Image (cartoon, rainbow, N blue to C red; front, top):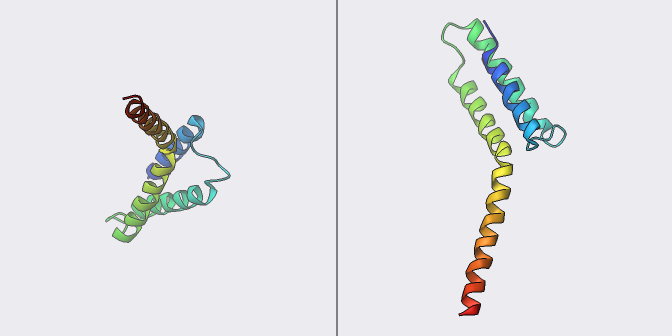
Length: 97
């Protein structure tokens, strides 16, 4: 069977690295965990007619959520900046009036 999870994971990692939000050194442990779980998911899908266990699927999903948070770093930074700008604008209007 094709290694569907691992291939999809590697594309996700590559996209994050290209955008500059994933750091291979800083995120090494998370990426290693995701890769290990993706390999286990693919192996279970290939070896077992029922597919991966619920426990393995839940662990992989949890790791993917952590990866998504890491991929969202860029968005968090821009939102923090815009919130700060918004607060400054509100306070400057209050001070002027």
